[in-house]
Image 1 (tube, helix red, strand yellow):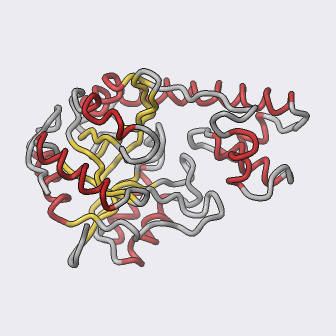
Image 2 (cartoon, rainbow, N blue to C red):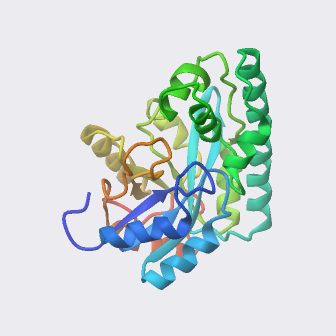
Amino acid sequence: MNTGGPWADLHLHSHYSDGADSPAEVVQRAEELGCSAIALTDHDTVAGVEEGAAAARRAGLVFFAGTEISAQYGKHEVHILGLGVDPAEPKLLAALNTVSAGRIRRAERIVERLRGLEIPITMEDVAKRAGSGAMGRIHIAQELFAQGYCLTVQDAFDKFIGRGRKAFAPKPALTCDAAIQAIHGAGGAAFLAHPGVGKTGRILTRLLQFPFDGIEAYHSKHTAGEISEYVEAAAAAGLLISGGSDCHGRAKNAPPEMGKVRLAWAHVSALQRALGEGKPAGNAGGGGP
């Protein structure tokens, strides 16, 4: 973690996926907090990257074009961050479009199940909330809250659409190999996202058999012990280290988390070197703690 000097937050979301703010507003908050570098990593889309990059240039912030791809390993959901990607690369866009189309099918299944519970929200309602971004459960939860079916946005997950609830439907996902290949094909570095969230950390050794470039060791939901474990794992495997708050603004009516994770600049520099040298292609060195 940062102990002074410039810092970065390399895991941020905007309203192009399940965040509350525009990319420009994300940049503005980062600037106000004194952040020096950010990555916009919306779920399964790069739609907000151009706006975010332009705002970052105006603010004088280092900006990494990114995305957070939904992947699957056996029965495990795995999130993979792509940092420094070319947002116009056709194969990356094709992979993201595949997942986004699956998100719409998932939303349709959830809405159908909600209607079976006599909750008459529609896909039109959900689509309006998603706008031009990647449709997700957050938009269904927001609609449930707006129509008075739950006390908070989070309550919608807890009552209706969270895992194990009556209206839940599984998320569409790429294989880990396909997600990593799409990131590498777009010139980016692939990071295993927040292994301490969910059950991903339990299969860390198996996951690191895939050609990841790094591990997101620092995350707002990681404990101090987990951070140490993932930093050590990255060092042992010769992998880069990343970190970020995973801030979504006030999408769930909770306080924004940006600023809680301040990635030390040494890790930013290591990522810049790896990207500049064209090294990301699995187990790229240069990112030890």
